[in-house]
Length: 77
Image 1 (tube, one colour):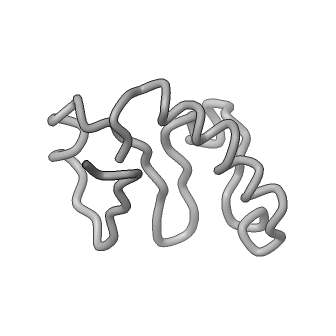
Image 2 (image 1 turned 180 degrees about the vertical axis):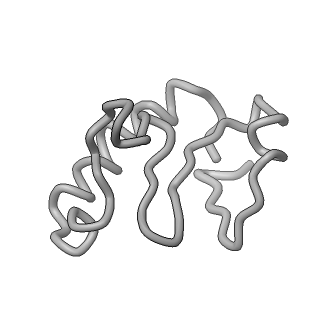
């Protein structure tokens, strides 16, 4: 969870994609392709038995609509 949309987009571009590319075990299961056929977007990456979804705290609907066993909050105040 990120405070603002810009922070979430920057994390995806600067950290998440680079981490996936640099880690062979992640690259095998998480596509960084953003085509409609892949089902992935900048804020949603699916993989077998799970997904990574980037949400912002200023959007209660996006936070509440997803059930997850693990939630990570970037720099909580």
